[in-house]
Length: 491
Image (cartoon, rainbow, N blue to C red; front, side, top):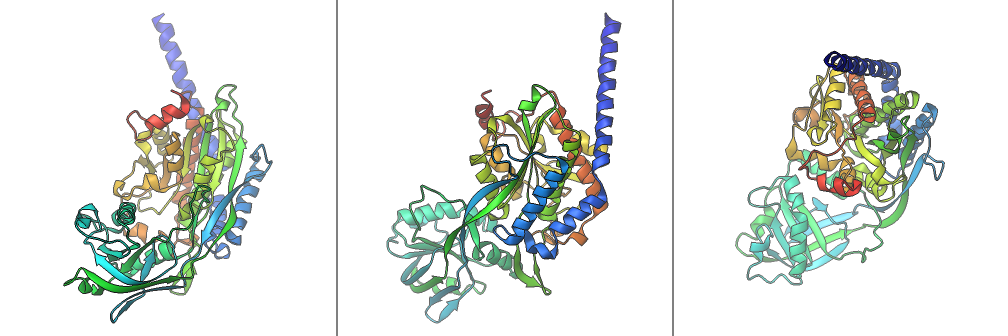
């Protein structure tokens, strides 16, 4: 009996090794450097003008992706027989005029956080950081609140932005007409903030929206601390604010969706989602006569990673079924994925994993960085797959950036679906990343395609291993989304 048990274990080990090696060969037959280059050079070409959501070039990218899925044999959405899921969006333009005046001071570098037209002439009160303790014994009703961004402990832009909801709520409750926060940022940060806050923005229409708020929320770049000087000796001053030209209208965009049925009679009822966003930030401020933000790393690479998985799984189907989703509107606030989870083409409880792919850049070609690697039970499958192609899998090296909650995976995680993000190798969000992230320099000829071949092969093999594993993947107990997962799957 002991010999029989040992023989059984040996056979299981041999068969497992054979299956793994067989999958490696399957990956190599469909993932090639030339095909990766071809896709990325098209999607990140000047002709697609940065694939901004709502543009004709974004639609061309969507059509290209749908045609690729069709050519692989991936099936369209069953109910519509189309690869396109219509996504309804509200587009809000930037202001044509922004101006702050007080006495002889006039400033124009104003960031419009809530896109509201206003013309105000009246009183403003300085309230330190505009937090609860700063309102004690102060009447701000019918006036503007002027304060310093963030808190006394943290004035970094990301931390300051996270405080805006709290500050807005406080000011409204106290009867203020708006909030002006004073910041002091360098020219590169100013350019990024102008693009993010003052450019065109989008949101999902909200049927319960009570209508346009008259409350105004602005950041003003006070480089020479001129506003601060006004309030040095007095806490109240006369100001004028003008924000004009903001308009709204509704547009249609599209997620690209395809399906491959699994081979196992039971496991085919479980789906693995393979996802990435295909939009980028479009055309912006020119740098050395280049105004097209091509988005090769972010996220043509991620998009083509998913195309590679689709081609492979269509040719060699896995035990679990596959759902491929390429999202629009990620750069506008994760809108395509937010729309999808509220309008799924298949029941969410059948989606047992979402393997997202998104990138800002890379600084280490020996790695694949998986944001959320240790948060699900699929960690072993991912680590082993990456190692097969000579790379090392690491978890998030920059938790201060909040990357898990900044890509489309988070909308699935919030529903309870385990959802890490597969990214190119980086060890820190350093200068090598920011040199390309949302910059005109992120062109297809600046990418290391020898590295990308290994990166793509690693992702596709990890997809196969997760989709063929007899054990259904899930969150590690204690994770932030563990309870949501239990609720979704009724565990």
